[in-house]
Image (cartoon, rainbow, N blue to C red; front, side, top):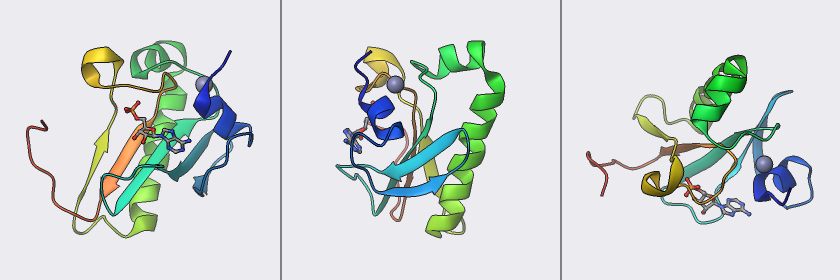
Length: 113
Ligand code: AMP
Ligand code: ZN
């Protein structure tokens, strides 16, 4: 399977890693949309949040635990931050390996565009 984020998890695609657990990896987005923009992925390949929840809900918990740990590490908890999980074409998902965006360091509007 040719998956960009499996390549990151395998160390074959370079990334700026900021947080690691045995089952998750977090690295800076290559095209940041905010001062803090980190992607958190499971090391195992799962296409999206729905298939992850169906196949390994404990890993979904690990993924969100890692995302909140990244927010703390980035120092954005007090000011606030946004977690985003784009899913499928209408959701704007461009990499089909589930990932949580951790966005912070500026205010965000709601609803998003
Ligand atoms: P999404 O649109 O939710 O699938 O998000 C995919 C994200 O991956 C985008 O924000 C891209 O900027 C980011 N991205 C793509 N390639 C890389 C890469 N090699 N390293 C880090 N981030 C990447
Ligand atoms: Zn993958």
